[in-house]
Length: 184
Image 1 (cartoon, one colour):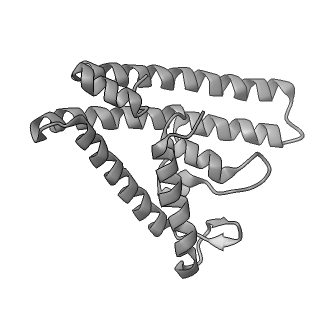
Image 2: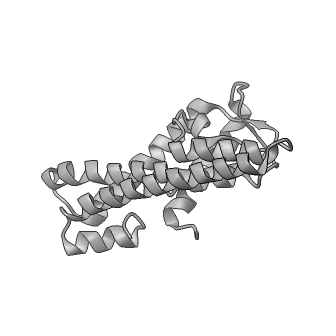
């Protein structure tokens, strides 16, 4: 999946800001590249990024306060469903921060104080089974099937959230959100 401009901004804002601020950070359980990362600074950088991103969406849509009051909760519902399905910007950042299996890295959700989705929990269980040399083929298959099932359910929720958002948009607004990657 190619990085869109929000992903690039997110990486620059959160990861770049984390490493720049890490020299001042108090020792924590989060390290990347041998540097400590302060979860409070990471959470603040993420909130600032999301606030700017939300404001940018609102400006691009050109909506009134009344229209935004209706549209914004549905946009948030899509974002939440994307995150739960492993499709959101935070998931992409998490994959970048974790690196390849066995290389270590950080758990971005834990760093930002966000609870792992069911899909992410099932993926972690699968990774543990893969990493365990004593796991049987049946155990690995069971964990893999659980990930697939969780992803199917999460994608159904995401499709419904997108449908509910589209129902209240003008054609122009739908096209804008499509171009931004929020709709398919």
